[in-house]
Amino acid sequence: MPALRFDPNSLAWIGLRLTVLSTRYMGPVNALLEHDQGLSRDDVTVTICLSITKATSAQEIVRYTGRPKNSVSRAVASLEERGFLRRHADESDRRSSRLSLTARGRRIFDRIATCFVERDGLMLEPLSPQERRDFNRLLNKIATPSADWPERG
Amino acid sequence: MPALRFDPNSLAWIGLRLTVLSTRYMGPVNALLEHDQGLSRDDVTVTICLSITKATSAQEIVRYTGRPKNSVSRAVASLEERGFLRRHADESDRRSSRLSLTARGRRIFDRIATCFVERDGLMLEPLSPQERRDFNRLLNKIATPSADWPERG
DNA sequence: TAACAATAGTACCAATTGGGACTATTTGCA
DNA sequence: TGCAAATAGTCCCAATTGGTACTATTGTTA
Image (cartoon, rainbow over all chains, first blue to last red; front, side):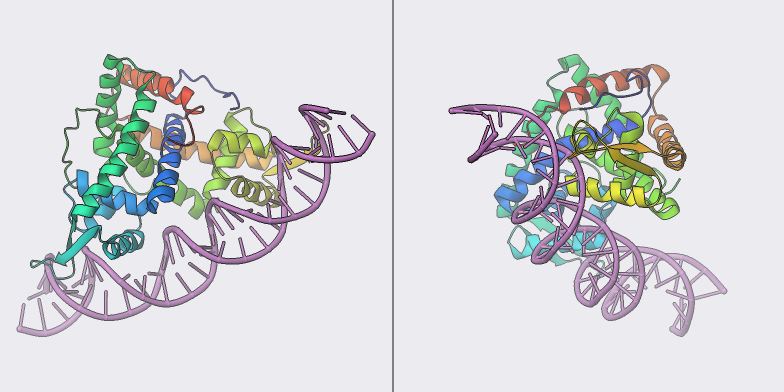
């Protein structure tokens, strides 16, 4: 890796460095799940979203993940076809469907979670227990308001 | 945004949360640069890499960014065509070209940097000056070894 | 030095992607 | 109530993408 041309102790390019880290984190996770389980990036996103957030519709998944809605729609259709999730009518809004994982979907989620846990271990290795808690706290402090960041500017 | 179904003070899903943050950070930056300057994601990646790292060849950019080499090749060709960078022969290895930004390329880099700086400001807003330094230090501690993480597993 | 492996970069092309149009339904409001 | 605007989700299709094969050059080994 080429050395950097700016002081890494400065705050410069902090968002870019975060993005490089995220790319290095997710790349192998996606490749493994694609190869072993035939799950696309969006299949994984949707499955996780239905498991760890309170989202129950495609639209809520779009809002949480920032993925295009047709990509989410495709992933939902594909997961349903393979028996990982069910769609049933939302009585209060007939445009929308309530989504829920099947037993099979929950099993595939467990497999997904295992990948992430392993990768988390690798990532946190350089930090002490106290540093891990600190980093987590600061990350949450940044990430929580990020849902409301402007789309432009 | 749907509420989470796990304790956000635990370390669970820390890599995923990092990735969601990165997606929310980069999405608008890429959209803006694409729309205003006609720069693709990889155009931006290459331009930044040539500016803030010591990379001077396509291969070094591939290693730093983890992008596929044909995507980097394409971006380099497109940036050259538009006069943002020059390729000149590497005397010591004729398979490879030394890459360098033109004056025009450095101007477009300044525009790119402005977007990132603005976005960084938004991201760091919830943190105190001390917390910003702490977060930056811990991020570097994690990100530096990430170049050597295994591709699989 | 011949033969073979490894590497930088490009070209090709099938698969994926996501913007935008479209349908169906719901909401806001005069 | 009626009508315009907004919203959930799907579909179409052109553009993008990235795996693979390829060329050219360099490194390695006997």
